[in-house]
Picture (cartoon, rainbow, N blue to C red):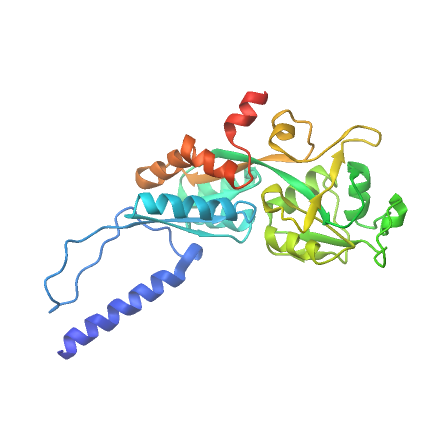
Length: 315
């Protein structure tokens, strides 16, 4: 191999390594990538163009986004949907900067985020509701608590909490009377939603166990008999259980389910969203259309989330 041939091969390998490492933080991939063959190489096989769609953001949606990516990629081998998490705020921030094709978010975009996207990219963000989710309140499977009011839930999580022990609610957790409070990091859309709808925009307490991912919350609660945490309903395992929520003390309490989200009896339900810069085109549009199709929505339901059709039927 000549020096020129060797240099071209090394350059190609370095380029591939860099592209793989860029992830959600790199520049949003163009619709038509393609690359040149190294000089002096054997007769190349017919070029296969592969479109890379960067898709990042919500950890609540990470599970379903990964499933969608895998199934879509199997049926469309010339398209790669690269999914990363980090939280809704991370996804939206990357979209605003033009660093991702699709931002997943379990909260709405703020007006200032929309304005910044327009100012920095010249495009208005487009929103697509791709499903629904409920924020489940999780405890260890052996915790005897069955229901809680929104008022008591806030009293556990709010700054200067008034409920810090299980016994204050008449609950006995052997050897674990202190409530271990598990939360999400503040870049999370779930964190923002919980703060707005449970704490009424007041601050969280100090001393919480703040987890980076939805699955991490459930994992910690499953190993901690005295813990309470909140996370997307799709992350439930046999090691934890849901606590039913009453909108007010004395009202009926409901657990998260397709039915209770559809009829709006469960108080902590929200939409799952995808955002793009402007109306999507090409392969990005095809992918979002597929996510919204019966096939994509069936996968959503199989993963423990709530399809759009179920909520529309309940309205």
